[in-house]
Image 1 (cartoon, rainbow, N blue to C red):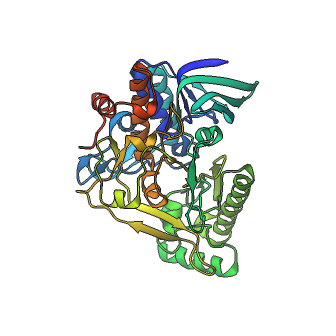
Image 2: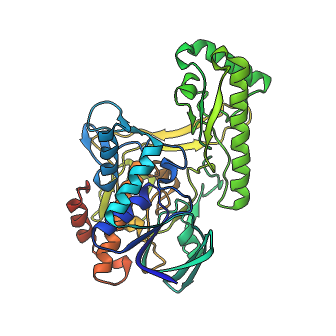
Image 3: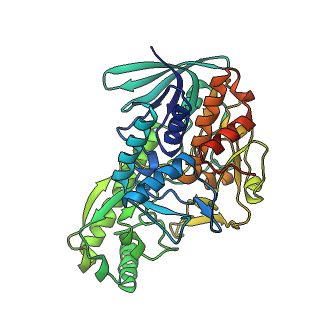
Length: 424
């Protein structure tokens, strides 16, 4: 059995930042990832825009995640929108993954890729070991502290932690998207009016169906081509099972095929269109939310509540993608705008699993209600949460004890030392 003081499971924006932050504080850290590349939704999932790091002209999320962005900006592998400090940036996927490799190794993080979590053995409030399916067979890992950054809360769930998922009344879960890239067309020759007419003909004839371009009733069709596809479809992912993820992958590829076939047959500017790449799985917008010592509600988020143990900001509107009613447009969105002078924050308690003595959760699966999760799920916020989780684990390991009793002020102080923006 392999033992580390800290094991982080999931190497997306949250897990990456957690591992780097902890390793920089001298903690021997292992970062385990099911794919062969770091970055999660930002790279493997085909969503290379981590969203809001600034609000009203001031930086609200920084630290390890923003350091990655700055390295990419300096190298010309990222583009900021508007003026500095950039609220949003667009990333080059390949170089983002390469830069994350470099940062992790510079920090001394041990990496274990191509290892999918398959079993957790727990007793009482302790995770005794976790087993991963690796190319050579099953690998057993043991840690003094764990960080679940899987997005689905898989480590916590398999250990038996309490969780919520979906709408409490209808059990509906937001649709996901299967990312893809298309090329081989003349974007500059495309005219929005002509595109819109061709798209509507495709919808009427059944060559395209609701959800193939989820923004059809909100954004121009030209945006579908300007973005070269990316995460512009909707697929149903009602739960976290192999069955539903398989159905989502099949549905997503059917949608992509319809878009490419329609474009080739209907648009003179797209006669040479081709699918350049496709993601390995459909990426969910929501799944499990692991219950913690604190619980972030929509009202907390809307009112920008301040917490004594606040560890990072989140600046993205609550944004629930809803399934359309029969015959309705493919895209329905319940959203709540934010004011730049009222920036929400996240408490450390929402990252601390209430059922376990040495387990933190970081990313979209932290403790909160569905509406709040629709906002804090974005990558910039996940980076801030991951950074805080890594620091909290390091603080706790320096004076071993129950993670639920970690010194929040020591965590906040250490975050400031690592150039994170800590809520007042």
